Image (cartoon, rainbow, N blue to C red; front, side):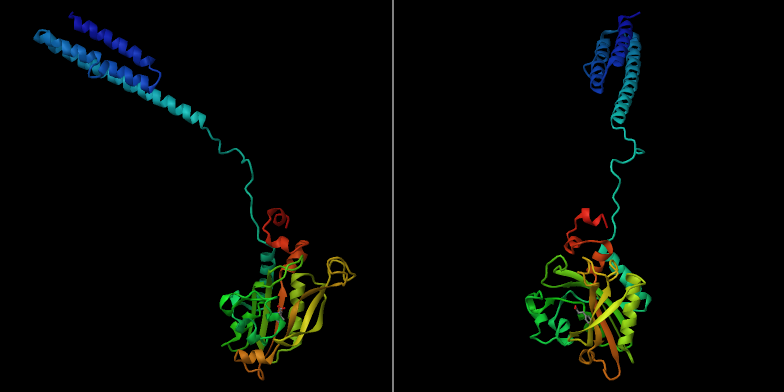
Length: 342
Ligand code: PHE
């Protein structure tokens, strides 16, 4: 048997042992290079066969080639095994049990107390056939004042009370601007509500520079103050309690005549007097009245044919009372410790 054959068999055996012992892909690459590389052992055997006789040369050449193929096969197998091992280790280390309960329960949000009161109010009025209107918060003096019969020198137009912005406009101090915007160019009958933000220079436990009002107005033939009282009573019963008591006190607004301030009987003390109602038994709710003929005329509506009523009330105070929040500022600071209790 020619020496080459022996050599090749030994080589193959050694290669297989080393391949099996290669503990990493890197080590395996090195073993492979040592046997199958350009300067590797098999190549060396092949280089040596030049000196052999023709028939031997062919035989050894064949054997060397099949040894090469077998080693290559063993290397691939080992490579696959090493790769599998590595993947299993990684998967083991990164094992994630998605069925375990979370460390913290996801927090569900909820609507802001003012939004809830607004929605409740809107629901009542839409069920009564009122439609919703909106107006701009940066408003012209015409829509906030002039058209509402509030003359230039009226104290409500004082810079102490109203936030003016450049160009003679102002942040609207009430939602009554929507009356003008909505009535102008429309023919009665109609009934609208206008919920929204309003702005005034004010800051105290009961006042905030931005707060919310809901305005309501209805215009038709033969509308009376009794209609206004009926709607507000039904509203109070829906919003607060079937036992609600309302009180109307004569007042003055330039855009209504007659005008009234309305209060409702404190539900906490049943009008006996408590901290919430400042011991008076009554809580201020808003202003109302019959729309001034001049305002109707300013909007192009014939006051001899049509009458209307209007009312406007604060929304935030209702939220404070309903949810037992002691200070209006807590509503707008966005402190979750407070809002989460609501
Ligand atoms: N706009 C008045 C206010 O802000 C409220 C009001 C509205 C009064 C409609 C009468 C009619 O105080």
